[in-house]
Length: 208
Length: 275
Image (cartoon, rainbow over all chains, first blue to last red; front, side):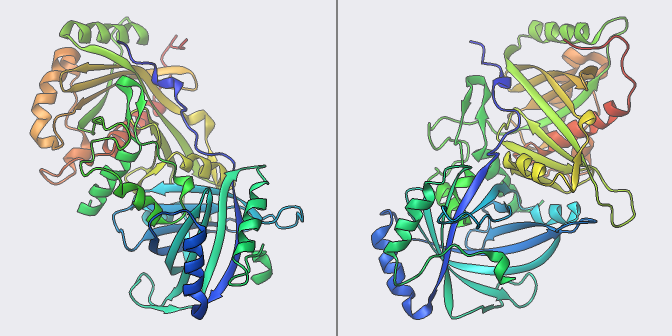
């Protein structure tokens, strides 16, 4: 039997127009356990997941305009897992009818040669940090509760210092462009986490 | 290459593997559904220990062996298509069985902002039908990057920094033959829809150490290429003795890249437009 021609499969592709819907907030360390407890109750009943990631933020400076920013992540707890490269577009926060920040998003899984390769492309590492925490899921929604630490000696993830006495809480959904109804579900879910944490649509530009 | 990266390579090719002979995708992985690497890994932990078994259908998935890519000159007085047909006929006479088709393509990008003042190196992004959900990005002489196809989307986002030299897209397409443990791919190399030459890729699937099977491969190639048998590919020659070929297709891709660069510089063959 002759196999079907390979050319029927997409030659190049990937998810062209994926958007990330995002709500952010923070919780003080004292209240962290209660929040985790609440999330365990609200989210899908799967084994609790923890993670420890090292994120490097790379910039590519052109002759004009804004530098191009890419985030490269690797797992510290699973050093043989692939690297995760992420591009995030300009956030759209103006639209009042949408309850979440929306931004274009490209996720790429990559081999361990990623830092060398980005350097060759002209990218330079701007800053790095370590994020440790918990991941929860509810359907397509994802809740990440993470503690961020500054890396004191470049490249050395053993030697870190906590950024603050609170944890970052992020509620996000990845969906194709135009599926604004997901932001309704996100708001409804965020309501259930009050008053432990107030998840909001935060404009990153106002904080730089 | 360190032991960990070989381990990773086998993991990557495992994720994006496809069984072309049966037209089945194995372990279709959606990285966009994950943010943290722990999610990636949780998917891996569900996989069985042997990396050649598909998580979903439990069937064995082919791993890469040792490959050799070479250019075959067009026979005197014949066209590209006639020479390709001759090769097909020889392979069939040997008892090879046709198993579908294959393609390999290569796009060229150059950096637009040249701050350093030096001529910028070209970035090549390649695809191979053997790993259709992967994308290989290369600089001549390294470094090399294996990524998933979302890398193509990223290159679109980067278009103000990296320009795609559209006219430089080279690809090789053709038939895929199997003869016992050998896979043979005879392709017509085309650039802007004109045929520029013939590529032959021979893979010996039963071995991953180039030095151990090179003589066997050479003998097999002699049976249908005659005097056109190539020397040991430089990707293997430059490696320390006995080093394993990584289980992804980077060694294959760098050989195709070398061939494509040669073809790009070459004159257009007279009367060689295809289709």
